[in-house]
Length: 316
Image (tube, rainbow, N blue to C red; front, side, top):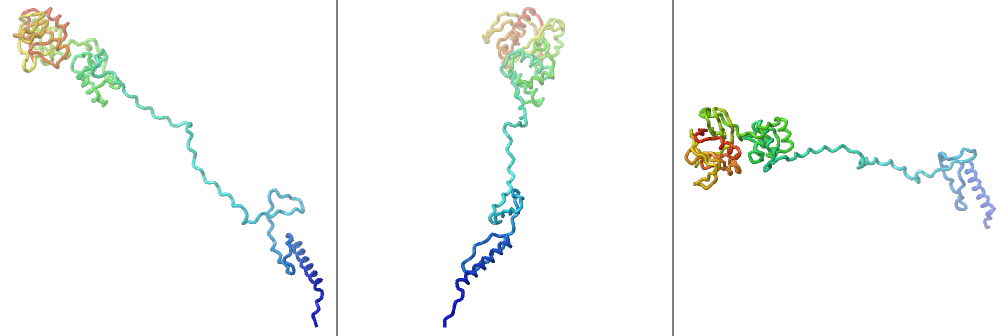
């Protein structure tokens, strides 16, 4: 005898209605939204209730409004990391900076070898005052003046260039006084030696080889003085006491065919006379035994005063 199905369709409807009622009751008691039912005939398990999200600052406060839940933690964007400190910015090129050190001014050359001027004469006179120049000023900056300046610079710890620059000149001015007229134009390049005793009586041409000077003396008084040059070692000027025995205003040497103006002979062919070579080359040359004078004006005046028979003394 077959099995009788009782309430088949009606039973299924009653089961479904019961399941829906359970779901609705669960939703009302848990405050969650209603999920659709699972497959027909199999009740689905309700999900666990979610924790309520914290209300945002913009959420309303009216009654009956529910807080909107935020996204799950796994789906939130990561918090931004704090920025790394940046390197200090480079100073603006226009900003003020420390002042650069002032460069030391370069000393300017005022006088050098080959110059000829009154300033050179003053330089020589000042150097002579402190023992760095051993002759009378000439106004010409030659090798002797260069050596004197170099000696002065070395003693004062200045660059020994031999040129007179602004630093050297200022130092020299601070150590010396303004030269007098006699210091600028002394009668002789070197200070005349002490007169030989034979020169102290009568009218005497007193000639010193050590100081290279001739002093015209009358009764022990110096009347005039001048620079002189002597013969070389092969033709030396004789030393001793002599007398002027002949004067020749426009004399020309018969041995050397050279002019000997204002000649005053005192020993054989040796005489005191003017020398243009001595005036031009100084002590770089020598005579053939005569006593050369380079200042024509001085020897012209001397020639006019000296008489035949006047004494001549030549000594070291």
